[in-house]
Amino acid sequence: MCASQALRGSVGLSHQPGDMIREIPMPNQDPNETARAAGSAADRTADAARAVTDAGAKAAQQGAEKLQSQMNTVLDTTRRASQEAAQRTSENLELMKRLAETMAAGAREASSEVVEWTRQATERQTEAVHQITQARSMDEALDIQSRNVRENLQALLDLSAKVSRLSADKASEASGHLDQGPG
Image (cartoon, rainbow, N blue to C red; front, side, top):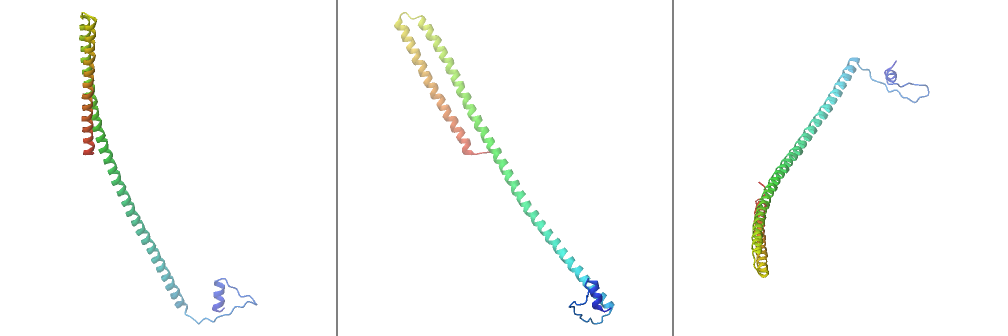
């Protein structure tokens, strides 16, 4: 059997009558030399496969490192933004607390003023009733009552002015807290 027939048989070629296959004469080669050439080709193929695999692994590693770096950057940015948001929220809550304390103090002071006005108005009313019961004439009783109404109205106007000043003072104090800002 010639080399071309062996080759055709090993690669699945068959030669049937009428086929147009030309045989190419193969030079006589030493089987050891053929084995060495095949081994050398296999080594080169294995080396190439190793080089491609190494290059792929290196590229994958570099891609993973780049992705890790990008993720670290995103996480660091997110962490800093979260910390800043928490800090601002804390500062805003502290500011709201100071404003609420200021307004509550103003409400307590205004309430104290109203309670004091009510106490004084009750005393004035009690005194007016006492004076009216001792009046000698209807005109005198009407004069006492008119004077009592005028005094109560004046006291109410004074209270209103005092509460307005107190409210303005507390509003100014609260505005100072806002101007100072959080912290």
